Amino acid sequence: MCFQHVGQVAHVHRRHTLVVQPFNEVAAVAKLLPEGITFRFIGDGPLCDWLETEREAGQVEVTGCVDHEEVSAELNNLRLLVMPPEPTEGLPTVILEAMACGTPAYATPVSGVPDVVRADGTGFLMEHREPDRIVADIEAILDREDLTAVSQGVRDLAVSEYSFEAAVDRYQRLLGDLQAQERH
Image 1 (spheres, rainbow, N blue to C red):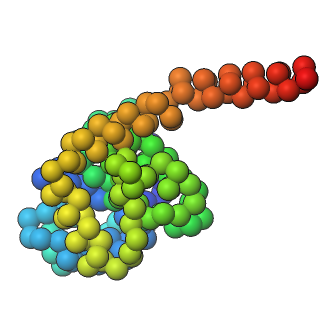
Image 2: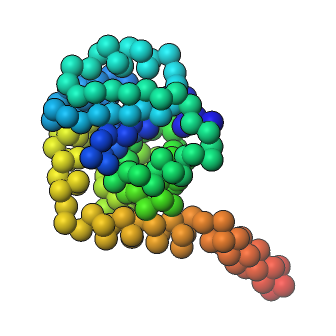
């Protein structure tokens, strides 16, 4: 299974990762990143070849699709997920999957994203779309001394609010509230 047909996962050596869309933003960000950083895109699509030819700095690897069973292993190896989703996407599943692996996200505050990527220590909101600002923010985030604590906070949030067990608890409370209202 691929990570969506557009937003692709890019593993950057030094355990930095970018998931960026659309592809022209990826190319623009790649051109500004320091030498020696490798984007490893996991996924497939018609623009993968274009992406490899568009970049001028760094190295781009395109792996193609990854089996669903391998997704968590890929996400576990990341320090940061960069996801500028478009407003039509709602909440990209890859953000929740990354959080469950303890990988914080740096994402645009559109649709459902601010509900899970919170500026209170459980993620980083992308306020700008200019490639130079994205690169500066990525470098600042990855240099944070508390990034390990943020990663733990992300994992804790995913387990407490978005796990299967948390969903079951919410439904049980909701159904219990509905039953209580019908009795009154």
